[in-house]
Length: 108
Length: 117
Image 1 (cartoon, each protein chain N blue to C red):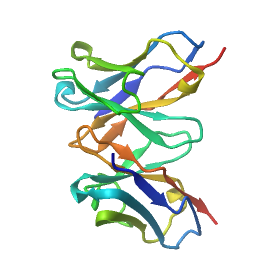
Image 2: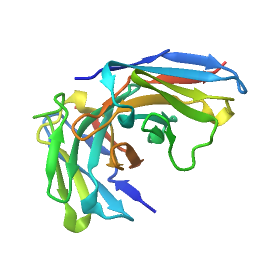
Image 3: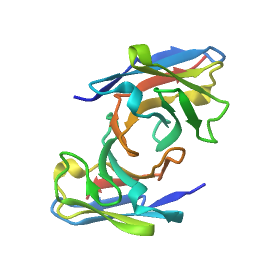
């Protein structure tokens, strides 16, 4: 079973700064099957990135995904106040739908 | 608009049974997998299982196999997650989501299940 490890656990930054979130897999993952979700308190998760680098509908272009093999990254180029939330990576694909433990992005 | 609407919050006692629902709107319900995800209080997301309503093909995460049952009634575009005997450790928010070619999108609003004596 593939394990996804996200780092850091918590990231403290200020609006306007650049955020880099990491997701490392215990085995190689096809980039076609790696997603990122945002979850705000009291809300359901929302798909942000799929296939490692494709933005979901309505997601601003300050969000970008990259990576391959076992190392994937979500980058937010310039943080807006509404971006502070928890982000999860996910390996998806029929019977395999593992989530990472999440990175909390908080205002510094 | 594609939408998943989940049933309301539940408060149950240990040992009781429960079935929660997730109704799909705005798309061909039988053509997409539906997944269930658990989120325990203050914790992360855990994938529980998926079902294809078209033929009821069901796959479970090893962590949840035998602990829950996932089903669907395509005549009313509804998927279900059920327990035969709840435990206090089943207290969590449960989300359903459509698998849109793989990633989970969109998600239901969540159903809070509280199990307490």
